[in-house]
Amino acid sequence: MDARAEHTVIRRFKGLAGGKAAVFVTHNLDNARIADRIVVLDGGRVLEEGAFQALLDLGGLFAELYKLS
Image 1 (cartoon, helix red, strand yellow):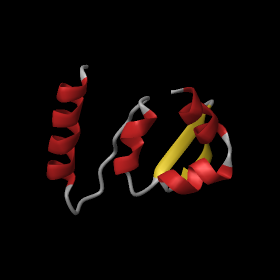
Image 2 (tube, helix red, strand yellow; image 1 turned 90 degrees about the vertical axis):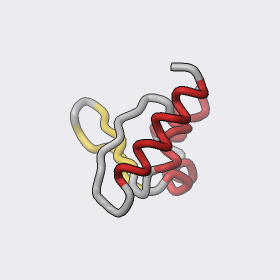
Image 3 (cartoon, rainbow, N blue to C red; image 1 turned 180 degrees about the vertical axis):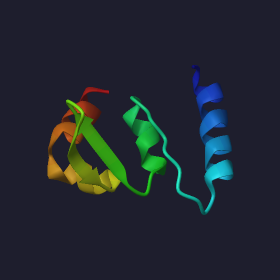
Image 4 (cartoon, rainbow, N blue to C red; image 1 turned 135 degrees about the vertical axis):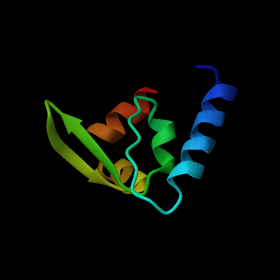
């Protein structure tokens, strides 16, 4: 998906989810910034959980993968 299409999808998702619980699955970790809470799965198990900046500060798998992008 190009940047313009991705922006449109995320904007639409935020509009539809406004004030409700919603699940957004992404491998583009920049898109994870829109989440109130991020859950990092590894091998089908929850490895890390928290807000975007908190996970970067933690220095775990999320931070490692983010640095690769």
